[in-house]
Each structure stands twice: as structure tokens, then as C-alpha cells.
Image 1 (tube, one colour):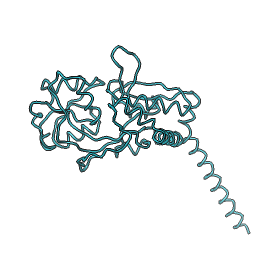
Image 2 (cartoon, rainbow, N blue to C red):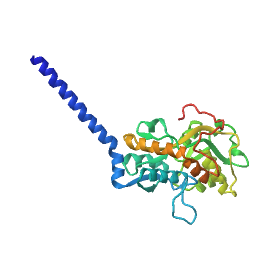
Image 3 (cartoon, helix red, strand yellow):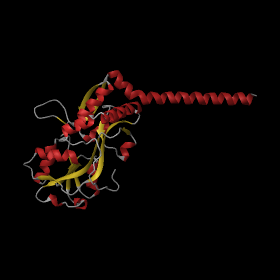
Length: 280
């Protein structure tokens, strides 16, 4: 009989500890969303220098762009105010990890999936190159990147692609598009690898530069997602619900067409795109 009582006591303690542990996890999972609710504000990390995703129009101090307006709409539907913190891309994940910001927008990578949660995609795209118009910077295949100089941020997938094929990456701070493009034009760098839609619009703003989109190379399909700390499971569910609503009611399409020249980046592209082994 004593043995039975001892077993029952042990089982009771185990169940009690499990229940306490479950409550603790729930608190962690809810902490970020609860903080946003308490403050009535969600803080978003964004570049502020990347046309047409996140930028200040000439003569204006009002931040706008596809990423910005999508974030505004998400905040509106979550019922909270929004605050933007502008920073270089290389600083965004650390700002998210430190709690300086609540969300950013970026594509998932193998390493970042371990620490951060990603919403359903809000943008689909692929990678391309800006090269010199007169000679394509001597690049006709991805293998021709060997020995070239590629302008970019240190930690992006685009710089990883450049390095994979033997290019030297020339890094920048949180600069505007013209800094990257001017350097290709004047020969300081040979190529900028980045998002197709962003680059297609960026070069239109600088017709005086000797630059063009590479006519033949389309590679590495990408997505852009809302990113948040891994433990923000409640916030993730709510953001996914909002993103699904925005796709269903056409809001994402409308915002996309406003900033991407009538194109809908909220839907997967039908372009034939080269997959690059070893690059996520």
C-alpha cells in the first residue's frame, strides 16, 4: 500500500511540474504579442534607402514603399500603431534578436530559421544582375563571376551567391540605390546581384548610367516574409491570418501594383529561374 501511495505522489509531482512548465512556455510564447498589445505599437525594422521597397520620396520625410505600406496595413489590421526604425540590412536580425524591433521583412535562410519565425510570403521574386550596358561587365554565365567585384550587403543571400562563384563582395552601409549603381557605372564594381523587381525599377531612375539588367541570367527564386523572434508564436499566427486576408481581398496586389509598375509580386512568378545548389 505504501508503494502505491509513493507512486501516486511521484506521479502527482510529475504532472504538477509538467503543468507549471507548460504555463511558463505559454507565457514566453505570448510575451512579445502581449508587449505589443500593452504598448499599442509594433516596431518595424526597415532600410529606408531601398526604392521601391522602403524609401523616402524626394523632398519628403514620409517613409513609403511596398514593404512599408504592407507593414502599415498589417499593423492596422492588428489594431496597433506602427513605428519604423531605419537601419542597414546587416543590422536587422540583430535588432530583432535584441528586442529593438518586433518584426522585419526578409527571406528565410537555413541559419535564420533556427532563431526566427517567418510568415507566409508577402512577395515572390528571383535574383538578377545589374551590369555595365556596353559589355555586360564580361559576365555571360554565373561562372563568369569569378574574379569580379560585386557590390552588396555582407550578409545577404545575393552576396553569398557572388562569393559562391568566386566574386569579391564590396560591402556598403545603409546607402541608397545610386551608390551601388554608380560604382558599377564607373567600374569600381562589376555587378550588383539583387532582387529582380527592385533592380528593374532602380535602373530606370538613372538613365545616364552605363548599366543594364543582365538580359539572360535569372536565378535563385526568393520570397520576402515578415520575420519575428522564434518564440512569437501568437504574433506569427495573427500576422499569417492578416497576410491571408490581404491576399484574399486583393490588398497585397493593390499595394504591389502601386510600387512595382502594375506588377503583382504577391503571386509566384512564372519565369524560368536557375536553381543554385547549396544556396537557400
